[in-house]
Image 1: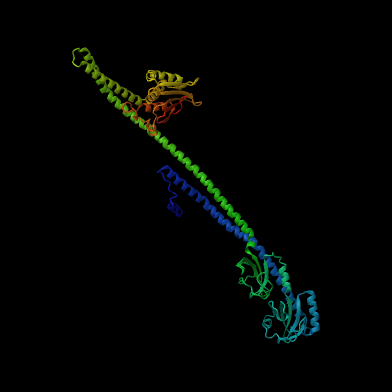
Image 2: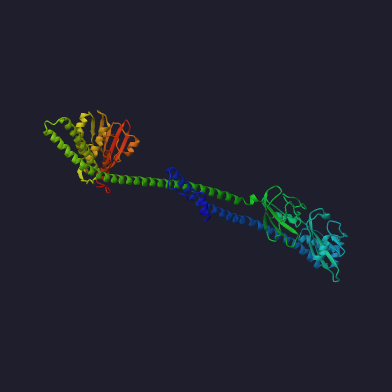
Length: 573
């Protein structure tokens, strides 16, 4: 409903039925184009948006998932390393009595075996319940050092085991501490403490085999680097970004680093150690395939829109042009029907008028003839010659009126067509004989250019004579004395023959040509009846032919009659 109201608000559903043709068809073309574009582009746009998000989600998962897997695998490697080392220390604390561990010779033997079998251990020490290191083996002189005030000592007293963050301490290089607590049979506690070099951490990071643009490192839960980063700092520096939220599973977040780059951070928290493993990749590198696909989708969408627009433009143009042609044909047919109806009405009116006029004309003619006869036999009638002249004028006027009424009746009555096979050249010659004397008298040059071997046609001889007589009379009236009239016959095509009558007379204007077939329209002021050409037009149409007019003022006129060789279906024959 709202869509329909939207269309109405922009007048897109208004198709003007009336108005000037260019404006009407321009509005029609515009509305059709907009509607077709809307109903094709909008679904395509929705489909493109849906595909965009589906492709983005799917492709992003496919790209990011391997990163999650890599982080998870490396995390497990770290946890396995730490678990092995913590288990080793715990095993030593459980397998050897306190007295043996307190003996530095025995402790040194155990320490050599630990380094040989597991690697990474830097030193090993035994701490009593006062926090004093009572025995120690390693590269430093730490025997007797008291750890009672340090936090890790209290933590291991509470939890039983301890793994520290990376720190420098007395050794001045990155290392971590693992400690386990045990108790004697008497209830006193003691702690076995080992230091582990973090170089193994770097080896595990390197085993991830990341590309040069990527970075991987270990953080503690305070955001301090436990291993060096290529881009964001060294060991024990602070991580410049906000720590990602806790997640025991590998997760990926999008951030912007201090260099302004958009990056993806894949990370995971260690469950039993105070560490966070993180891998940083530039977003552009990770989603390079997605950007390529997105560009291809955009150009595909753009290409589709252009194709749709061109098809709609062409289709709309063809449809509107055909509608316009159809409307023009309908208008022409309507005008033709209107003209025929007009002729029919005028014919009936003319028949009635002619009939009503003929009766008084007959009486006037009879009385005028009687007057003439009486004047003839009255030898002593005064002013005899004058009255005879007046009576003759009356008779001449009656003849003229009779001629007019005769033409009106000829225009109005239903003329029965009598078809016969005839020679068109003979009909033209016969018709010209009626006017031959006038042509001779006026010194007109009448040229008969009749085609040889013109096929005979089936038509009405009498009505063709009337047609040619009307046309020749008009040409005679149009030319001055000594003018040229050319009558040409020829075969137009397999089904049609033509007769053209050309003169070099006064010609006609465009406006006159539009009305010459209308009844009572005449340019012969005072002498013409305006019925000759309408009757001619009616006869030709009844015979299944057509008539064509070419005229130019001051140059002359050519009237061409096209006649079928055989009567056509639908004609009046």
